[in-house]
Length: 364
Ligand SMILES: Cc1ncc(COP(=O)(O)O)c(C=O)c1O
Image (cartoon, rainbow, N blue to C red; front, side, top):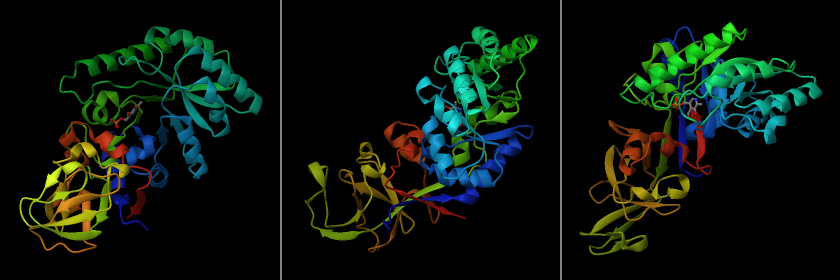
């Protein structure tokens, strides 16, 4: 097996779930496992969360739900990106719960569900700020009136999504919560009530108690990163490799592609089999670091597609030593957030970019 692996720490995932449950004691949890569980391995994480009794899982696209069902996941699965006509059949065939964002999809789902002799459970997605997902609140009653003529489509959930819940300025989130509540009241006056009400992503679940309703919908926090405050979360993923080979390099030599690094002393350079093809961003060139034997060491030269170089001149590094790219070694740590800060992105992107060729290994 290739030595470059992502270790998924099952106890930390369960720990984060417990922390979130304690923060929202009246709510169930929808575990977001879209985009390969933020790079952590969708099937692996879904299985852990299912075994821990999570109420729902959520993905972005029905195809992700199909993959989960094919992997034997039986937990209810919500598909967050509002359903499109072209994939309507998948919701019926794989018992996936769509988000409803327009009128037309309702009739299509009804026809397909009826033909299959099944009932489809769905969630009305209200767009309360982003202009991205769902219908605008002023159309909600009309949509529910339209859907109420159907017998095989049961819209028993209602949800929205926050655009700025991690922003120090709370005003937009507060307005969204207000609008969401008002719409739910309006719908209720028109006879439409919902069993499931959900809105809170990680930051909202942590910061706005009144956003928790009866289900919270965290992604990043489950994986150990808090998008806002410093609650006691534990990173779930470590990205590790090993020292493949070591070169003694004379002073004044170029390392790797494009003359990006020239030794200014006689040096020892370790080659490590991880590169941008694994999701280790090229744009970190000149700033990336790793851990070897508890030392934080510079990655030098251009990161290649499959490999990179570490300056180990001042260390006792040996071939096969463990190299930590994300994670902890002795008392040193590198997080996905550190990498994100190096290159001006967000930890979501760093984690979701860990590519498919990196094997995910679950450890207790
Ligand atoms: C609709 C929806 N809900 C919940 C989440 C989870 O957000 P976070 O990872 O910030 O908790 C996302 C993430 O993109 C989302 O798109």
